[in-house]
Amino acid sequence: AELNDVIGVLPKFAIPMREVGDRFQNMYFAAKGGNWGLAFYMSKYMHGAMNPAKVTKPNEYPLWQSFYDEKFAPVNKAIFAKDFAAFDKAYTAVIRECNACHVAMGYGFITVVKQKAPSDQGIDYKVPSKGEDVPK
Picture 1 (tube, rainbow, N blue to C red):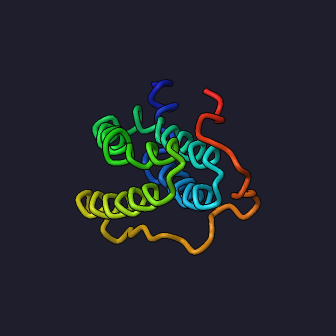
Picture 2: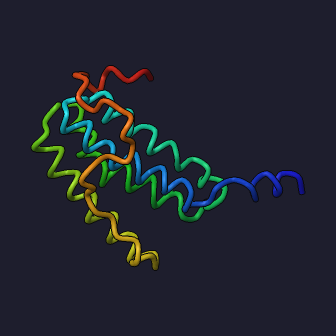
Picture 3: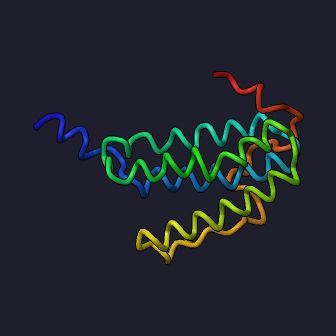
């Protein structure tokens, strides 16, 4: 019973997805500004934000994991290559994949768009860095 109480207060998908969305948007501005370390940091912690779903949504979590491992992989590859053109192409493809997944799961009313400004305004997105700068 106590374990179920703990599981009951863990976020399902909606709350972690909010963090995923903000980090995803910030990642674009970091890459655009040449702050590749920040872009990868956002990717890494965007992925980690979904960890509660391993417990709260065990049937849905594998969809997220395969999305990140497969569909999102080109974004991470472009980050480590410091290649904004490849990043922009992969990032735009991920937006399409996000929206297709939302439709497939019955959430077609959630449509991801590329923001005109980052979600977090208090970050310097132009600090020169590379993906390898992110601590393990």
